[in-house]
Image (tube, rainbow over all chains, first blue to last red):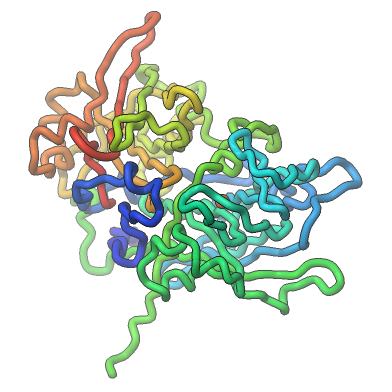
Length: 242
Length: 206
Ligand SMILES: [Fe+2]
């Protein structure tokens, strides 16, 4: 069997640049030298493999995964679901997806978060799952609240869920944030607006997905994730030196 | 109009933010939720080779340690094999080669225990010097930063490494070399990552 080859280069004009003065924390944390472009070697085309021994079945249900028996998290019950694909449109099966978020009041369960909205005793705020053989994943959670943050004096993050995705190679590693259709804070957020192309921002906005709701129970949003694709090796693959 | 290529675009990156620990290291955020957190044991109990500790700091452009970083490491075993189906060869049972570590909230220090990796194949028949691939995310970092940690005592292998040699500025190559020390009988490599400014670490677009 032919092994696939290098990953398509990352489109750095599509991703946010490192230095975006309106997102103030990026100013001192952004490299000023150009990145050195590296053709893929075995170090980049490989990456960690995860299996069902690594996680528990209930890890993807944030309404219950930190709740006391018989209780559940407070907030608007949502399903967040979608597929993890590569740039060739192929699903990525059995890949690890991890999420974290604020509770329905916009408060994180984190020792460094001091926002005055209360902690929900039944909500941890993290979940993880593996995609199935079709690259499909789903989480059940509560819709996170907007929260204020220090940048300009009056900045509010739109409701968002942080997401970490692996793929099959270290070159595909990605962390992003999922926003929700119709939120007026999206357009005003300096972190969202680190992304220069409005079409790229749209890729981070999950639409309401009425077909996937559970009637009388849980509303649903769909969020597909695309990781880097790679070339086939039909003509040449000198990756490993032969 | 020509045909459409129909490729999808990669999902754009966003910063991991200040609360990345909740998702990827909840114990550090202050609560216990999972049966096991991932990435605490890179090499496992059966790994051959030299046991080492890797530690360091991440420094921002003002010279201050960054205290809310999460780093991920990806490395081969002592034989130079990655625990991945696309790299021929078996690794020791329990060797994963991947780990994740966070910085201390007050000092910014980070560190992990592992084994020293072996040399791995490079492109076109070249050999790459032993190295650990690192990925760095934090508040204020919009796209995760990739770099490589090489080992001070691998002088010859480093001198022949095709990736190190691709860096045009020889003085910048030193930013990828971890310094070897011994502490309480243990081999420790220290690796200081400078995000910006003088001696800025070399970061790669991989
Ligand atoms: Fe957040």
